[in-house]
Image (cartoon, rainbow, N blue to C red; front, side):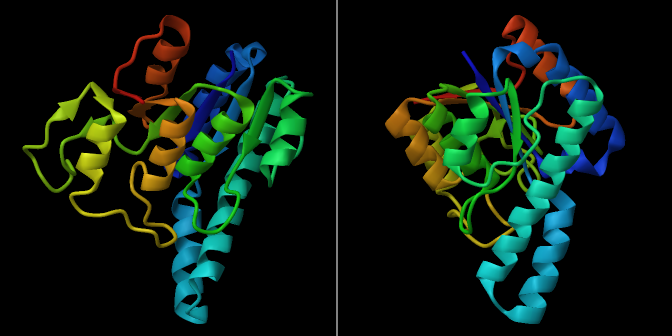
Length: 226
């Protein structure tokens, strides 16, 4: 069974993190892996400038998408340098992803279209390929009852159902502007529900947690089930 791994764009702020994730993926490259990369700081910079100069949210979104694809290319070439049989193109549609998955064990991709977070892209990729688990290496270490950066009393959650997650995210509402997506947006949750997809949230700053999951099925974060 394949797996979809979502890498927060903040991974790409660090050469060391990029290299460590590439090493981890190289070790399990025979199992069928789709890596979806976020845009990170590069995307946020271009989104900010585009919003300022054009006043068009769609333009900001498109630049965010291309920034995520730039990160995807960096990971693709890093994997190639390690001898991984990685697909040497970045799929821009689900149809392209399907063709790539039929011919290669490792595919890296970024965003697809305006209005979608890369978390949603990872869920769509899983649905399209019939994969039932997305591992979200995020910019936080788990799901919390509230935003831990704002509420020091927020409690860490180890396991949750989709209905519980919806309740947590509805506290502040889901923002839909480029570069401001929540940990999981409501559209991603809908796809997870209709296709029975689970999501594991891990700390993207600690690649060792991904290793623990891939090697020992140990979840040091949050498991979200339909």
